[in-house]
Image 1 (cartoon, rainbow, N blue to C red):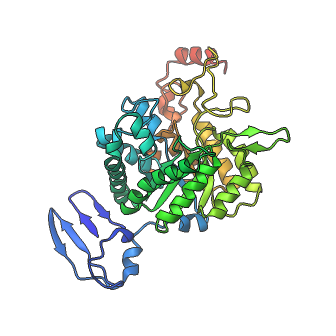
Image 2 (image 1 turned 30 degrees about the vertical axis):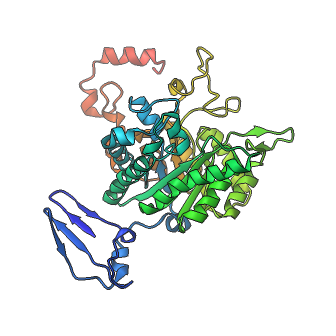
Image 3 (image 1 turned 180 degrees about the vertical axis):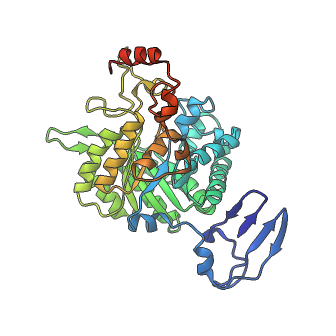
Length: 411
């Protein structure tokens, strides 16, 4: 299906075309031109239409391509005053859908290969905390439809999203079924809305991640899955890194792979350097599935290994969630992270809570890409004081420049 208008041509991907009682090899194409619809003759070569679609996630990863995913929507909207810290429920989808669409577009323009629907924390438990359980279906469907519109327009992949439920109890089998039911509510909508794959993420408890994989396999109708653990890890006396429910991290990743997750790895909680130290262990463990690495852009350390433990270097106070600015990574940090992922052969990369378009652009540039936003990447050659371009130099106030450079200690 193709929409034409006075500005853009948008291709609807083959896997989302309505099949209207025609044979498997014949699909009706509709053309909407200047507000009027026309029915063309059925195409009998489905492959021609399918060639218009972007390659699927696994097709890309198995062919050696990198896939960049921009996450971090909740923190982004909280900083902008459209989402409440604490519950972190994405009601901005219902209150300001135009802003959600805009951020999707910004992330794609910065180089994201994926439009991730804003359904993180759009589950029943989180909505109940703000007395909006009745909005569950509308919020999830609207989020997916907003994201789908951008994915179709930009020829990128559409991802649905489920996450940690915050109610899981390892000791309670009844609770286990409640968690699985919560996953099913969102998975059903994700599948119905035509997502290309599903991201199941931020599981500090390994057993809950396994329930997510089980639910995706049971209700996902074959949808591709990316399943990642949040590295809330602790050390044993023997130096092993264990999940909250005491599963060694490399074994946890292997078990997710064996259970049927298509892409496995880590997301959230830890910054790039910390997470990469874990990913190096996972890489050496012989996991065959493509690996995902999606840290937060904060400078976590061996002592403060998650962003929830970070402290202000001046006051010593914990900074999560609203004072994390003092611990933000630089863009150089992100560039180095991307280079290291490339060296390790980690093919699914991105940034989580705290991400911004400039970070995603930097990450893409670190692997040799030039997304549209690179048009405005820094060019200090023509900076008014530090530029080396002759046109700038001839207009410098020599005295002003020397004073500034002297203060920087770089004479």
